[in-house]
Image (tube, rainbow, N blue to C red; front, side, top):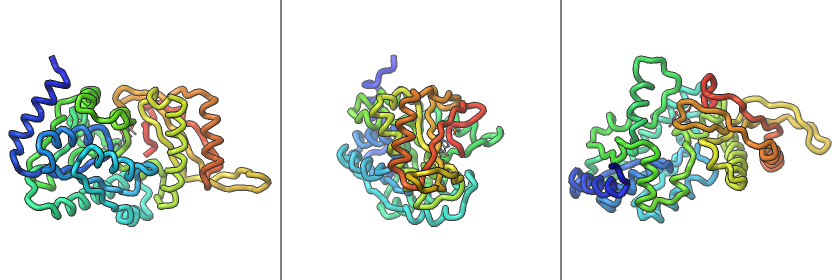
Length: 317
Ligand code: XMP
């Protein structure tokens, strides 16, 4: 019978045997998988695990600072790298979703490789790969049609030419959460919604500018905080805001406005492969619409996405 406690002990022993007193480098994303994987490796080898957390400028509001702080509190040996300007610079003028993904994937690898090169004598690459990633990377990159190229698996290992330490490779998401709970990882990490690697870049339709990122971060924060306050956060599988590339007419006081629209998305799902739009209460949606339009400069219209997957996808890009 599989138990988290036995898994943890066995995994720590295995990592010790595999790594010995050599060094491991690992990128953290703020997500459940990389966090649980890092903590397991850390328990096995301590500060011989070197973690890198990159700010690509496409995370949620205050996410980089908050998550970096939590990592430090967990005792992880982690370096935060501010690479915002690099990402914004290379994304300038790019609207095609797949081009955005490729640029972000490439830059992430470049930054991570640079950081790894600064560390001496690294022998292993740690990764939070879980079983569905292993399967999905086969179907996403395989002979079938590519709908979206998820870049969170693949890329790094081939380019780094190092041994891999992947303690979660055979686990499903719910097992990862149970292991996380077993080793004392905060519920704030464990209960988090999934968030795409390319971040807000694929939630800003069309061209990305730092101003649009800031606008969307504000709207997203109102929405996510609102979901938490209304105790709806844990009832949906994923939620977020999408900034549409259209402006429309509105009225504020007795002024005409011509500003952007934000779409709210919330879905229920088991694994993200199929999803239903969440039937959030009208009263809640009304409050979100008011709060976003009142608090976020540049937005004068809010819509709710009532499409399920398939035929829509969860993200709009
Ligand atoms: P879709 O939009 O394909 O999303 O229905 C399914 C799940 O995958 C996430 N997603 C991504 N994750 N890189 C990622 O790491 C990506 O390029 C990417 N695109 C979508 C999405 O947020 C949802 O959880």
